[in-house]
Length: 79
Image (cartoon, rainbow, N blue to C red; front, side, top):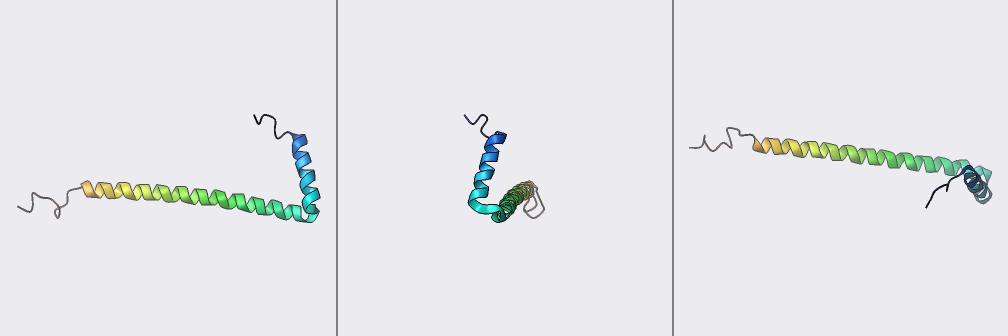
């Protein structure tokens, strides 16, 4: 469906239209803003992924602690 959509001639036409609409002074600012936005999105996704991994590790550790018999919660020592 989108085969050959972004050929060099298509990208050149898009660049010319953007240059006409925004002008030569605003185009670098728009590119920088777009790059910063993409970078922030990637960092946010990476942070979210790291938070999920830390949370999964803490949940697995709490499960292990609940299964371990300690003298306080061992029913054999209470008798």
